[in-house]
Image (cartoon, rainbow, N blue to C red):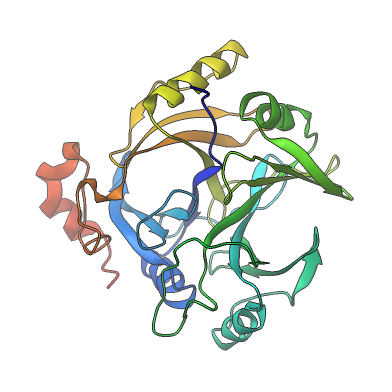
Length: 310
């Protein structure tokens, strides 16, 4: 059986204030908090997962909110924009909503023949909402955001690089992507292994300064595989290129590998299994603080330190 990278699994970013982050993504953007847990390496810090109702791979945006963290700086050697897919004709709704909530945004424009709108979250993380007439993924809706406007999941991720050859080589030679189109210095790579969350844009900026990953920055981009067999298949391919890659790591809701691609961005490969309902029912997702087993004995201490968000 041919092993494939199935597009984007999740994207993880860094935030500042936890409650502000929660309020923005669940309230203003209307995403579902599907898991409330802690950072494996820093249990006094939340790890939030937002997505659609089921937490389907390709819809999952996660955050480490560190109170008081310094602001990051966008530049090369970074994932610099997160693209969401939204229903055709919904950008006016989103423009009005962002304006109503004093969110910094740019008016709709066109790229690769698609209408999109750019905005910044409270920490300065850059997003694009791209209209799609073909996306039929399940949406999470709220009292204020119905199916005609609700976010579907990821449309693309943008990586900015001084020289794109190394990153493009990983995408094409290892992950099975193909260069589909280019506009000026933006090059769109796509995979036909999945219908959605299947796009990586590489922006080549030879003279631009390297960015700094901190508050309002993408920490890493995770690509999706079906299971652990596929995970280890791709580990062997990365090792054969001479790149450093971790051993398999159990993240409770998926199994992971991490490596830094030649352009400097931290990539993860993550499995579909076991999924987010392994420790909560579908209805309960995101309502309980779930701790990795090694921290369960410290629950009272951890709950006393974590800020209240709802």
